[in-house]
Length: 137
Image (cartoon, helix red, strand yellow):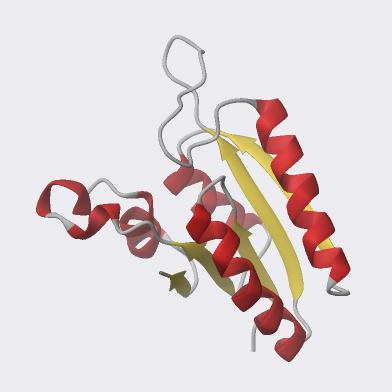
């Protein structure tokens, strides 16, 4: 059912908490796991630091190594992908590239207000994704 699961990770508590659900899904369906993290750059090329948004390529590399090790402890092999760009579009592009059957994301709830709903990464991914999206609150 879910041959390839794409798990979008960042530095947020919600992403860390979603890892257990991802591990259970991957084990249940014997899925390929792809971990993705996105470095978002401002127009001037400097890193942006907002909540769980990744601020540098080094931070992303360290985060992905940690996530890969966490899943390895659970007996799950994970491929890692590091990209630069707008997170919502990049997540959807990578999902398409790896033929993901499911995207899993932690949700901070920032898009629950009318001001944030149209601009939240989660909302944009839900609307643009080439496959189902599982949001873990």
